[in-house]
Structures are given as structure tokens and as C-alpha cells.
Image 1 (cartoon, rainbow, N blue to C red):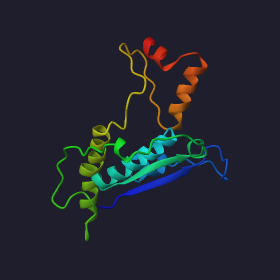
Image 2: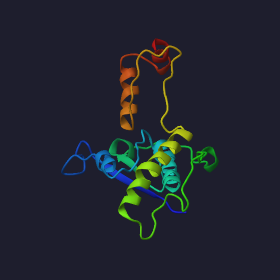
Image 3: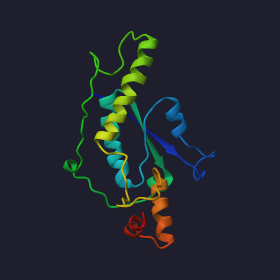
Image 4: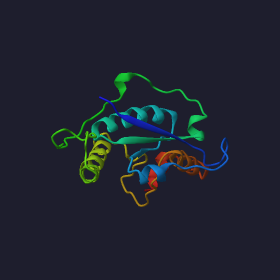
Length: 171
């Protein structure tokens, strides 16, 4: 019943490290799905979903921990019943998706590309981890952001006088 949630502490501004760091590319190179929380609530929620996604897909799951998020405080909801974890309808091979003893390299590669990564994408879709935060009945412009950038976009809209409702009205 295991799963792996690999938490990477990134420090873009070199606040507490000698070099700036960004882990998304290392995760991508290793073909590890990445979750990027934008708030402390997201750290908890994405952490739990990341672990569940790892268990479902047989993959490690990455979670980005930025100083802007981790060096802050917030009141969050911790009720264990508030989150639901939907396991998508996904056909798995005999023996499941996890690593096997004596696996041949090409079999591992095929299972990764043809089954594990699609299983992770199916989990993300089924649990609506990628979502629209400001919806509009007449969308004209879209901004795609993850993690800290989500908060930055909301703050930038606020700085120019656009509330989420006003931005939705403008499309």
C-alpha cells in the first residue's frame, strides 16, 4: 500500500542556499509528475493527493516546497473527511503498475510511458487537480499558472483593481 511523495525544497531567490534552485526540471527528466502548491492548504491537500496518485499510478510524485509558501502561516482545514480521492476507471495490466522483481528495462519503459504516466494524468483529471480558479461566462483571455505564480497573478490583478469577480466579468 506504499507510495512516494518526493518533496523538493526550492529556493529561487537564494534566501537560504548558495545557488538558486528549481526542481521541476529534475522531476520532469525523471518523468515524475509534479504538484505545485500555491498555499499552505494546498501543501496539505496536494501532499495527500500526491501520495494517493503515487499509490494509484505506481510512480513517485513530486511536491514543490517554496520558501514563499513554507515560510508562512495560515489557518487551514484539516478535517480528514473534507477531501475525497477518486480512483479513475483505468485498466491496469496483470500485476498492476508497480515495479516488479526481475523487470527487463524495455518492459519498465513501456509500462512507464504507456500505463503509469497515463494513470497519473487520469488521477489528476478525476480529482480535478488542474482547475479553473476564475471562470467567466465569456472567456477572452486565459492565464495558466501553478504554485506561487497563482498567488502572484491574483495579487497582480488586485494591484490593478481587478477582483476575481471583475476579472471574470471582463472575460
